[in-house]
Length: 138
Image (cartoon, rainbow, N blue to C red; front, side, top):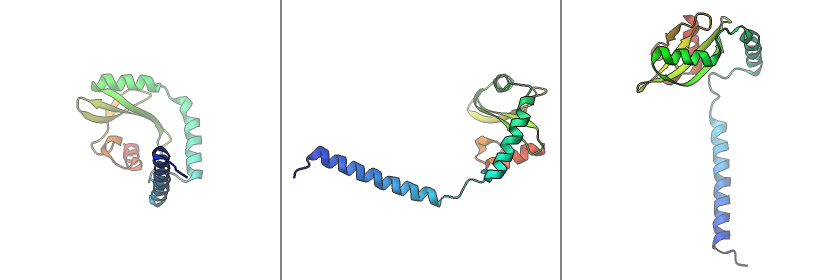
């Protein structure tokens, strides 16, 4: 029985994909869970608290992005509404200002813009939990 070149190439490609799939599955199993992941019950409680607080948000996310872009003369590449440990909502906007990345916080009640401390934002490769804890202390 003759398989031919295309059949042989197809079989080789399938074997390679299966081997890579097994390797990445094993590799993923070895990696520890990210520090910011909460246990399921804590995450569910956090999401319930967020859902309860969210209707009180006075500034829409889209408006907060516009405010941040104008205040810092930058262009947004990401934004989040988060619930702090204190139960207060925070809007954070990640910007490209010139050739630098910045993270700013827009107060949803006053619309004031605050620049995150250096080394405490998403774009500084800190663990997400550490940056939020620092922001919540302010």
